[in-house]
Length: 306
Ligand code: CO
Ligand code: CO
Image (tube, rainbow, N blue to C red):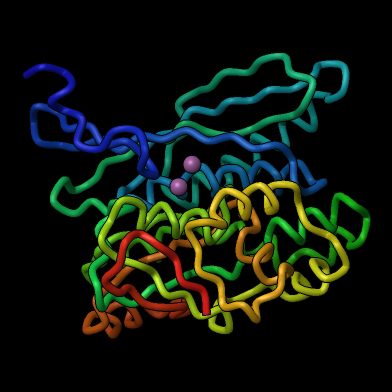
């Protein structure tokens, strides 16, 4: 077998999938982030939940991880670094993932993340494309994480006031992934740096479907809209909105603030799942919170936000 024949999913999806000769398929991904909270243990935990997410977004089961850490030896002592790793191991233990090692390097800006490897059923891969007209669109976490962490960095909110946002970032996408698989989802991705609109746009790109997103149904973190109205928006949200603008038909009554909120970059965001309507009860039976934010219709790869 030529090596390239074994690549079932190459670059462009949430993670790559490689088929071994014995029929086992590996799912592989890497991600790293800069600190978005002040507590090193919580930062390590969030980054780990974020790095695991792409495996779950494919419908895979993570097994092993390698840590990547960039830091300036002048600015950070070993206690801080140790606490980042403790936070990571805490989440890996909960996810049943073994830390196999890692690599650190000198960097002016602190960075931490993981490369994660898992296995996946090659017949049940949750690709980013594949949504079918009639599918419902489900979102498993509220958006606004980037706005809340921007507010924290700007001193507009304190560490102890963002616990609700931290709780969502620490929520693994494992159960959402299982629910999507067992309910026969057509497609799924996780909402991260490109925001809800950016990732939704990836799901319709080059396809013959459109997504209709009901703005009022999109769950938003407490206070996030107030911060946007007060001008607390990350640069990433502006960039994301600029990038998707010509692929989205916005309801003209939606203000710039609402459009920026929908473009807010997320860290460890939820899954966006396209699921046949008849299978919604199977998804619900897994017993965790999710929101129906729209549906899939025949179209030409556009997003319609009402
Ligand atoms: Co992803
Ligand atoms: Co990623």
